[in-house]
Image 1 (cartoon, rainbow, N blue to C red):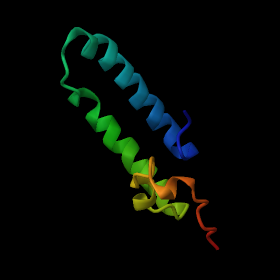
Image 2: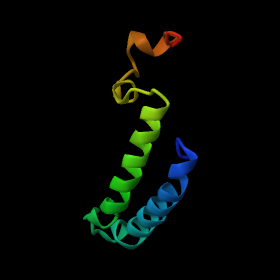
Image 3: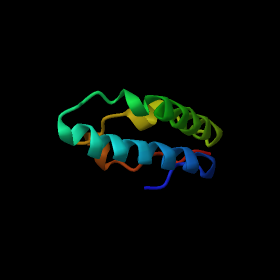
Image 4: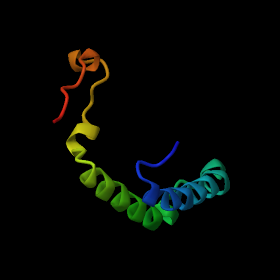
Length: 80
């Protein structure tokens, strides 16, 4: 999956590579401490939040749980 912004793509790629290494070399062997990629995740997350703000996307809108609710089937209002 692509990142929300082109500026964040290299950060996402770096985090994804770290995650894949952690998953295959740690998690699948029973070691569940996932802190090795946390610094990369935080930098990527900050980039995504910045792009969201620039594109006027509210974080609360992204975090809403809509599955299985009446809102799931509603078309979102158009923003001007």
